Length: 305
Image (cartoon, rainbow, N blue to C red; front, side, top):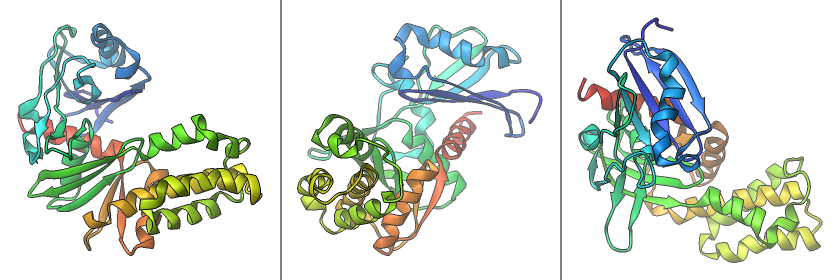
């Protein structure tokens, strides 16, 4: 840890917000977090939340604060208009906006997201573009497809340090909706993690990879297997999870080449997606979300520092 904070990197998500103090040598001076994400506070509360988060850590006036994520959404602190694809990742900071109302000790800038406007392929991202800039710093010269497993998974093709195209899959949200608010919830009453979980994951994953076009039929097997095949909540939860991930990857097979695929996300999800990719002969490597985010925020600030 270094003694003096030169600037602060902030990742402002929908549910949570995280901040890291960065010293002159690039090392962390502090790391803090809060559950006051964009979806849990009003627009007028952003300045106070920022002060609450990093105010005690500020060493002096005019502290540079570089923010990515949902603070720049239409419902956030100040909308940072999307950059259109093909989007130059090295130009993110050029689209940053400066919100008003922050304590005079801080100079916040919010990085933009990226959008895809082509008819039939409309899509948006906020936060992942900064992680992809981080990927380019962690893996210089990378070209190909990167995957961000999560609530809304992103598949992104990068060429010449530009986002060429991307696709969002609501895999994580679908799992939550189906397991909590559909008829499938009856198959998952009880402990969802147990001895049969991995068997369920493997079976569902294979089914999704082989027949992504039959997803809506294969999903119902979760319920039927619980009713007439004696499958417990652990197998059913595993099956549904594996099925949705398998179908996501099966539906994007035409995106995949021969190169290794970076998976930017949590260790658990990266293992799950890595196993599914391995089933179809694709190698992958994992990058922690926070590592990619911090690397991207550092790279963005360096463009103007």
